[in-house]
Image (cartoon, rainbow, N blue to C red; front, side, top):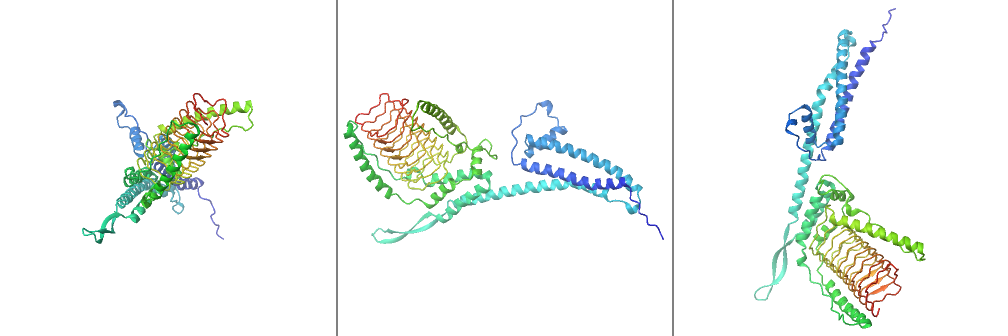
Length: 529
């Protein structure tokens, strides 16, 4: 009976064979890490690097490698990873060469039947890996360029659609007075609305184009709804300021009744809002958190993201204890000072921020529905917003200087830290509006309705509030110097720590108004109050 040779092959050769199979996998894994790292870093441009001195500009291996990393957009963290992976790859490459050297001798010295293909696999992997990586990089670069071109083309097509018009027929009169059918060009609302929605989707799906798309939509609103095309609102009736006491209050009540009637007629005669402008406003006011982060990084880092300053939560104002004690009073005064300081700092940050703002200056938004829209930080200087609905709108840090908002509805609107200087808010409905730290210099609030409004630390200097109704308004720490409040009803208004120097409150109703020893009443006029 023949004996079967069960001798195991040389262990050294088997181990080298295994190493020859494993090393290509490890090498490819390292190269894959480099590829992924370069792909991710290429989306974030590296900060500008100063030019090296003349003596350092000789093309060495290190300077060439540094130039390649700069072109790839690799940042400092990516450079560290690149160096570590490069060192690991070099070590593995040397180990692969050594393994191949010993494997060659093992293969040539072994029996042909037991020769291994490990050397071939190793050599194929080492020679083919660079070409595979290079092809992947070229393919990724080509894909990015193609995608960028496609997005640009989609934006251009949408912009062209924004100007489409159609022939509209209407009845007119000829020279003989006969009724005839005439034609005129009018905006094609269906196509324009589709273009606006398409732009909104592009901005949401391609964040690198977000700010540019917002600029396009804002420009469309400004061009198609300019303030100069707004309907003139009625002026507030003049009141004889020489009257005193109850006579002055009666005069303001009559002026309020007359203005209410004129404003109601004005609002009922407003033309219907344009559907394309309404759609544009909704696209602007419903941006996602990622889109807002793009705005926060603008313009310093156009491809990056950062927290938007206008999304910073406004400080919570302190409350005054109903059961006052010396200890509770002292704690309130301290908390109020801290709140006012924090509010002023945040308001200053709002004013000086370079983050992107929706630019809707000098627009005609009369009667439009802006409720629940995110307009934080938006620029609405000189906007005509009479009769507009802004309930639950987010307008923290918004700029509304000289905005015309008579008869507007701002119930539960968030306007903390907003700039409302010289704004017109006559007969506006401000029920439960949040106006902590807002700037309301010389704002016209005649006969406005303010119930449950939070105005802690607000700046109301020289504000015109004659005949206004303030019920349960929180005005702790507010600045009301030289405010005009003749005939104003201030029922259960909290004015602890408010500054009322030289305020005019003749004929005002101060029933259950709350004040403290910190309330400054210097030179206040309260005849007949």
